[in-house]
Length: 626
Image (cartoon, rainbow, N blue to C red):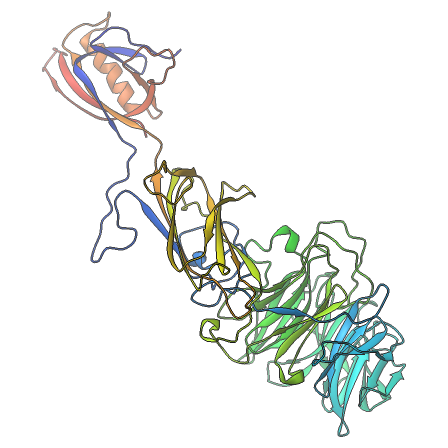
């Protein structure tokens, strides 16, 4: 049982009571050494607190929990803000166009362009958009089946728009007269001055004259394996046809009329290849919400992974399938359908196509559009609603003399202006912003789970603020899904919040202990679309507190027998306590709660001894709680 000490002038160590000289001296041992500062002071030079400063999230989304004190602080968990500038701002404004006027249950299978005008295949009904009146007008064509792809191409001096439908393809050169070709075509491409198509069985064909097709290579895979047809580069720089499949990526050998398996993937994946594309210097092959970069350079192929599924991936209600990758000036855009999120129950089977035309049952996920380029990480461009149908198709165009991304979701068409060069929205007075956005940081634990951290104050620097352009600041603790609001900022400059809550530093702000902490910033604007609040930086001041541990110094009196133990025996037991590889019990109190029974390491032992056979003496020892 635990030792107790009742008499004055004695202590208990490792089950043995010793007589002592003078008092026991106790001091706190669990303290950090002073910080050493060389050169100029930094934000973390103060002796009794530490500082976390966040001002750059250009690394993108996807880190749920910070793993080390490194450049991962350029990452966040999730954000619908624009992350690539020197401050957080609202995302670009997405415009929902008018209803297409098509009734019943349908999805928009493809979007195309002809004569600088946008066409949408709404089920089997094709409509043309009027940019001046924001209307879709009446039906201009009826397809034999729902569209799976759209392509604009020039053949024989005439520009055509064609919709592939699996039952063939329907084409027009003027937008009013449409022709149906019964040659099966799930996807279309233009290469080598010919129109190419591939059907659901993997049969590739080409056409040198509109309406006349010749079979070419046959994909050596089961039916329904084809998920895309696009142009890409070989190691020698030659441009060829590539086919995305549920079994990996295949290139077309035109001379021998066959397909060649590439090094990308190989095992079957139900969503493999959907929307694969060549962007800049590499081919990007998708699987679920992951993507493989297949780079060609110096006559040698290199493979790397770069999808939004890296690190901690996406929030559970935003996971799903990349249905399409789209080329744009600054970003590779990923069209991600989260209504079919993996792990959830969903009665809709999307099949191998990137834009199947069946009606998609709503699910709990939020479909969205992401952007990526090699300099930055993944950034959210647009986030849909949880009860909406899937996002089905996207298209980048300069129709109506406006560089825009067009996309279809929930049987409606949206568009968003895209920058035609690298720009800073802070310097562009006409930039149109969305109404609101949320930014959730990664969980921060100071890379130290062994200590308690105490949040003392949070400073948030903002600009562009007003009574309608605001930022609401909240924090979360210890991996809870809930947040506690600190307040709403509506003025420029630095706003300081003191924990547990309040803006008065002289109030009862004793700090808030945390194992891990994160912050949520909710940005909102008023009715003026060209205004956005901006978050310049977030700075946390916190204290790291080690658990209270003590060091005790005491001098043992070994001048004679004590409690039946000779001086020699006492010294022998002391040596045993010093040599113990496990902690030994130490106390000098009789506490009913045993709160002063310490388990210690005897770190130092100095003393005076007689010589010869005289074992008497004294020894000063230091007992330390590790």
